[in-house]
Figure 1 (cartoon, rainbow, N blue to C red):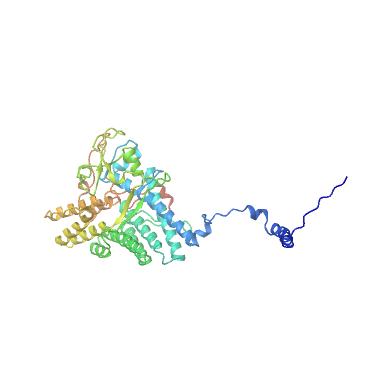
Figure 2 (cartoon, rainbow, N blue to C red):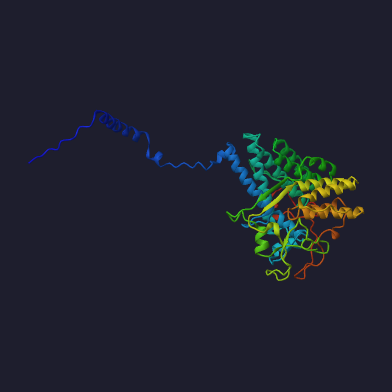
Length: 447
């Protein structure tokens, strides 16, 4: 028997809607291929071409350049000591509490051009400079009023200052953008003069941003001070407030962001605050100066079982900040200019201003010209400890103030291994730079 089932009739409106849906379905299938359906969007990723054509790309270059600068300046737990550590070892700031000979060369002031650590530190400085150059160029092209372009130019200038202060005369500056162009050897004066003009460019790009303007001004004045232009340097920083601070900060998200100064200090016990190092060194570890907080009792390192352990308490974590430039430095520049202008009253006034953030009393005038210079550089040493200023200052004591290098730098018997300290007054350009056909060797290893 055949049975039939009666189908309920839909209301007319529902029939129309069902017909429309059926009619639209093939249209949708035709209009969208399987390739399109499966294509993923990545709104947080930037195509390479977009790095130089969009503000999003410029912002990414900016962030990368800040990271590269931090590694070049303060090092990274992923590798690379940076300027703070290498110059800290070479001067009287830090003692080496470890054993690897490649690192010990820096503490001995006797670094070979083949030293791998020296090469990575040098390459890191130039990589960071190139990153800043690229970011600054993109901002200038697509967002010329964005002060981050000026900040990038100021960091470029700072890296050139560090090259002029810390490396031998004759270090070249090459470029890789848009293509590799080998630069000529630059004397110390030429490098510092380039730093001044680069800082001027940063000032022009800073707009009304007070932070960037102060960073560019202090950077420029630092180079002017290195050139012996004391009055000009003081004028450059006259408007910088004492409260100004520009710093970079380590982090804990990746090994590259972590602090090598913390790792080699508190963890490894090899990066230790010095105390009267090599006859001429200052009493950094035991002075009890509020500008230089110290941890540790002076017990010997459990790495080399010789070096007293004192740790720089400002660098007591993996994510600490590192001051690059400050208003305190601006006041110290003004103080030195006053000293060179034979104005001891203004000199003491500026030294006192530089002490205000630390709630310190005004210093007393020691009286003689030589003692005033000693105090000037002691104030700089404690206020800017472990910020890559000390090597430039020791070189200036020799170059500008006529001091005997043997009475300025750590000298004589090394504190372990029966070794004697060398005579380096700057860092040698590594042998890898000889790939540059314009570079042969350092022009001058003196101050």
